Image (cartoon, rainbow, N blue to C red; front, side):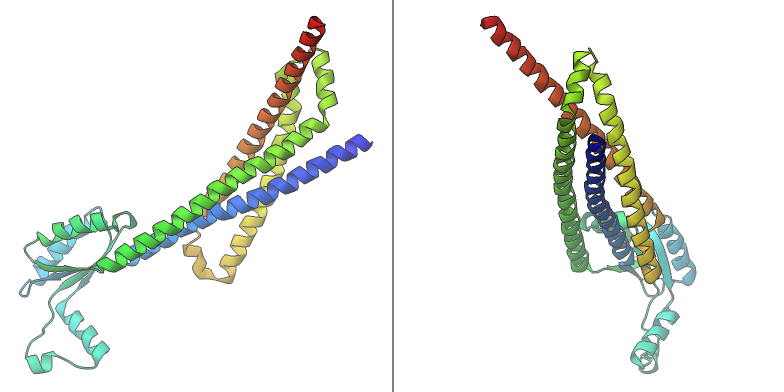
Length: 294
């Protein structure tokens, strides 16, 4: 009875410790995925303005617009006629420059939003060069310093999150390994009995692996349940968060927690049991050698 109680407490403590580790790792995985979504959102919000030469006809401008829209790096393109540009200027400044210039000083332009993968200094350089090769294009404008600053800061944040994830992974493996090792040690007499009757190592490992599998599954269900519930509550509290935490990222987070739990618990159990069996085998050989020498 006492032995069963001890085993139950060991199962409970192992499940709790594994769940806490999975909660931390799941949170970090979600942070990394959310950081990527924020980076993509910021990148796609960057505007590259293409200014066309005076005298460019709307027909020629629309043809160029269709050519640019087919490029692989284009996420969205917004055509701005000279009349629309003048109207926006009047609304913004309250002054109509065409009244004292006797003509519309604005030319046709296009605002390009690029795909996130192309928002970097090297890609933007060749994109600008490609656009400037068009005869109708007189200027291509974008905030170069802002792009470099954003990429630098976002890359730093991503590296920090990945480093923390790697560090926590190492700590998690150590904690789970120690927990499994204590469980194996507490059942050392059972293991020795099984070895005395000629049980194979694979047979001895089996109940420990099944137990660890159960701990991993239960811990995953608890950790994923808490994390998913918390994310859904936050999205319900602020709907704008939904664009940074899409459903696919929640699924990836839950799957990552499951994979990590199963791989780590089974791996640590396999290593701990094998190490214990080898130690016992080594001790047995040493005793035989001492008896033989004596």
